[in-house]
Amino acid sequence: MLNISPNKVTGRIDSNKYKTFKKLETTDINYTTKKVFFGFLILVLVFMFVPWTQNVHGSGFVTTLSPEERPQTIHTAIAGRIEKWYVNEGDYVQKGDTILFISEIKEDYLDPNLVQNTQRQVDAKKLSGTSYADKAITLAGQIVALQTEQRLKLEQARNKIEQSQLKVKSDSMDLVAVRTQLKIAQTQYDRSLQLNKEGLKPVTDLEDKRLKLQDAEAKIITQQNKFLGSKNELINAKVEINRIQAEYADKIAKANSDRLSAMSSQYDTDAQVNKLENQYNNYKIRNELYYIKAPQSGYVNRALQSGLGETIKEGTAIVSIMPSKYQIAVETYVEPIDLPLIHKGEKIRIWFDGWPSIVFSGWPNMSYGTFGGRIFAVENFISSNGKYRVLIEPDPEEEPWPKELSIGAGANTFALLENVPIWFEIWRNLNGFPPNFYQPNGKDAKADKK
Image 1 (cartoon, rainbow, N blue to C red):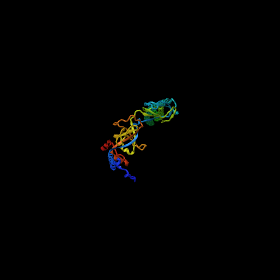
Image 2: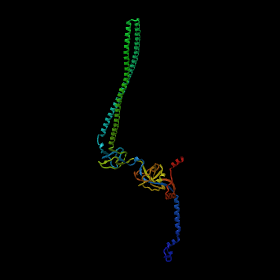
Image 3: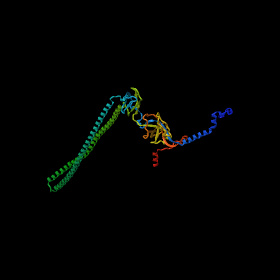
Image 4: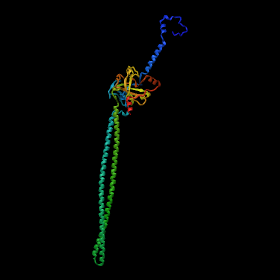
């Protein structure tokens, strides 16, 4: 009894008659309590020194390793009106299969023969450009012919100048000869006149000498006229050269101007041809965009547009497709304080939502239902949720991941770090310290090597 009440029953009851009183009197309750307490204390102290594997927790979801293998939405590149659906939700489509057909709604493209008409415009402009090119070639040949003719005309004029110079020289020599003859005739006449006065020469001889003098005077006038005429011919020949050069320079300049005009028209036509060809290709490609096709093989998850006759804008989402072939991965997020402990190639343990598992993060060997992974990439820019994104691929050295996993399923991860005693881990968490800085052996070896 505890004997708490002031009314004692010790004198009223005979304790020898009851076995319970005898056992309570012989049992040392304090000793048993101490024994249990110290045993528990020893057990706790031993437990404090049990190894504990430090780890970094993360949570995320199942995704694919390559961006092109993830679920995607197919958009329309042009505005249009829904005319016909070729698939249903859940259908499997091959790459290039037609999903939807839309018709044109913009007035600039309503002409059913728009592509053919544009092609005719391109052909007509090409012929126009060819004509301008031929004209430029013809004018270039004409310029060459004018230059050849100019060269020949100049050579002819230069030859005429040389002939005129020789003629001037010849007439000049003839004039000198005539002047010499006139001087001789004058001298003979003066001598005959003197002799006639002295009676040594008859009058007939004097008259003969006078006739010769008059003839010489007439010849010198004629020769002077001839000499002046030759000089005029030389001047005219020189003037002719200038005239030929000016005439053909004008003709060549005009032909060259016409050629440049033709070339300018040709270049302008070529630019128009390029523009029309660009329009033609755009119209041709636009016609192909009326049929919205699957970019890769996969399953149609959901039709985001419905009905017939509905008008849609450029960039409108039509359907979502899940690729049929993909390599599964896990996208998880870790706290910024744990980012320095995460390294590419490090091993990760994962357990998936809906998959039976018993997890002891500190004792990974005792866990059940977890799968091995390996860090494939670590994002260096913080995400909108305030954490850093880590992409994990299956570890080929571990058990394969379940085939039943679906994209988007939840996943939890923990990266294994160093082994420490439990007391150290408790003390670290109570103080808010991060786990011990950890680097894989490969990085340590590289650092030592440096």
